[in-house]
Length: 255
Ligand code: 13P
Image (cartoon, rainbow, N blue to C red):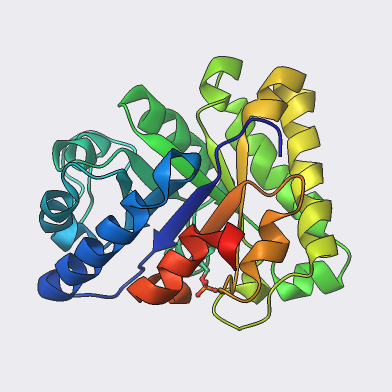
């Protein structure tokens, strides 16, 4: 991996009450701070606990992310959260276009691209997700689908802005299934995504952009994934819900 700082990000999805989230964040804070500055660490809890988790993480190196946001800053959008509300409670990042949002909540390539731009405009660093379903992979459509998703995101931002976008490749068939992509499968798609970034914004941007792998990342497979030249980190669901397994991922070089 060039000069890209690895990012280990925990997506807590729809889990943890305030007390549980604060307890987990507190454990992660002490373990992650011991990791030093050579790895970035991030957690993404549900909206209702963000303020409490921000307080628990105060003074630590652990970044905080929302799991979604709306593209408008205010107005008649019942149930939505604005980017400025995420920064207001201490978020530095936001996860956008997770496959669960695309699958269950009708998020589109255009919508995810728009949110990526709006996040940047409002001081949030987007972690924008892409990935193919099993049917798409088996139908030989992986590169078509991922290429289309990545292009939409890249075309919504300038080259300068693109360097701040984190792209997460999460094959849908590997999420929560225990079926991790093989190193060859992950590297093939990551290299393809990086080339696509280069095609749209040039080689310097392609070299700078961090591309995370997500989908059944666990302590026993993280080292092999992180050794791949185009894998710059992990977006983790299940294994991020317990401090000991998440901290093993943060310290992936020691696994
Ligand atoms: P799992 O690590 O549980 O497979 O989830 C991956 C994911 O969706 C992270 O965003």
